[in-house]
Image (cartoon, rainbow, N blue to C red; front, side, top):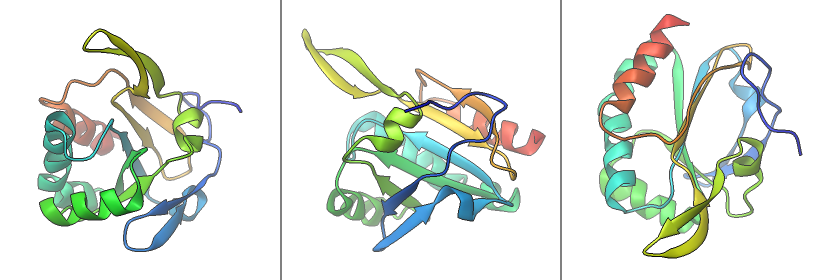
Amino acid sequence: MATVKLGRVVPDFKASVTGDKSVRLKDLRGKKVVLYFYPRDNTPGCTTESQDFRDHHQKFRRQKAVVLGISRDSLKSHEKFRDKFEFPFDLISDEDERVCQLFDVIKDKNMYGKKVRGIERSTFLIDEKGKLRKEWRKVKVNGHVEEVLGAVKEI
């Protein structure tokens, strides 16, 4: 499977999201799309990052941007996570890692001395025509959402 490239149209994908729905990337054409990949629901960094996107959600909407969080967690886990923290955006469940592979975010990591495969915290900005305009890999949470918002305003 090919992976995404800056300046190129992102291949279409369909995925299950919270609210008992599915999302198809091509159906979001005409809007900017912010896809943020995070390792796990209800963990400190992932919760903080998601809360930051929640707290800036109205600013993203004013820029005609759709925010979607994505991890390998189940829809059931996502529903609880979203409800607990009142996220106004949907979360994509990618248990089979199809979308993660498309964006090449599954990496070998060291966790307490053990090698594990997991999601490398990453964010991607797709423009109204479906082109990948910006990517952030190995994201540090503090200040990240503001940086993404700034990039959304520039396109």
